[in-house]
Length: 396
Image (cartoon, rainbow, N blue to C red; front, side, top):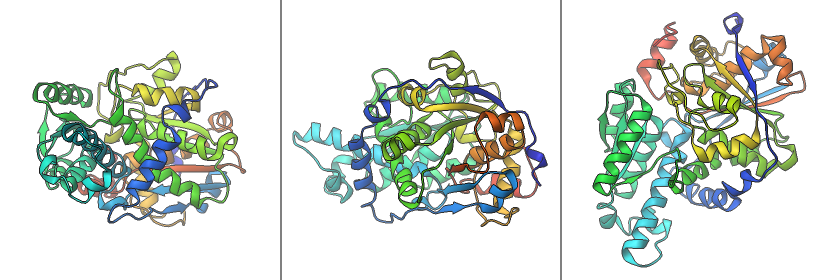
């Protein structure tokens, strides 16, 4: 059953520096403010934390908990917490500026400024889930939305964003090219970029995105009776990983878990950043099956946190992603069945593969006493791709 996961993983050690980025880049106030607002939204419900004791026994660890974000606000991923909250905060800042008075998030949420919101266009680049969250938020708050997607984003994901009222612009390049075009056209037209990655001079929306993700982590911490010893976190630009790592540090302090970052071999910007000791771009030559993690440029703000919090960096081959999706869906280890998307299983696939290698398992300090937290970042966000995987296709 697990033989498919006997693959070579690349590992590089982080060099966590003592510092307070987990408290200053994302403050406790950032997190508490986001949690107070998002938990007040219509339709808010905590998502399941699924225990996987059967798999834990088979790979030789004490406990595995999988945070399943598929049901989140009906949007299928944790991104629902970030893009929509950041959109609300952008609208709050701009409306307050235009009206010359403080505008509350609640006022916007309840439609008090819908006419004014209609004149504020929000834009972003996406591999799918962030754009869907932004489109959903804009639809709720009454703002126009433009989403830029690259050539490899599936049409199913594009349709999902159009169905939420977004104008979707597809380009010929990759994700990083779509980011550049979104920035350029926003500057030319007076639109507002709501991105999950930061760059010099652009920090507020990415901070709000990461603050929104803390709702997910808070739910985990309030559910677990004991701190995890390890957390395996998907890479991408680093926003998810940095948010979770910071929130776990703030909640558990010295008992915070060992942070293991997982990326596709084909898009390993955080892995290269760790090897080089500084934020490093990765030239993507081929798209990974994990569409949400196909990012070549790390978020500078996220890297500030990860350089202090992440102990290990792993890359995984695409070949173990589809098997991990099927393992969860088919309940192959006797655990509850979970329908997960390709990016959701990165940490799961890496954990299983690491436990098939005595050397990597030892390096990561995994044993029968380990309690591992996994973030199942998305459910079935593209039904066609999911159906192909479940039909036995490993490359879709």
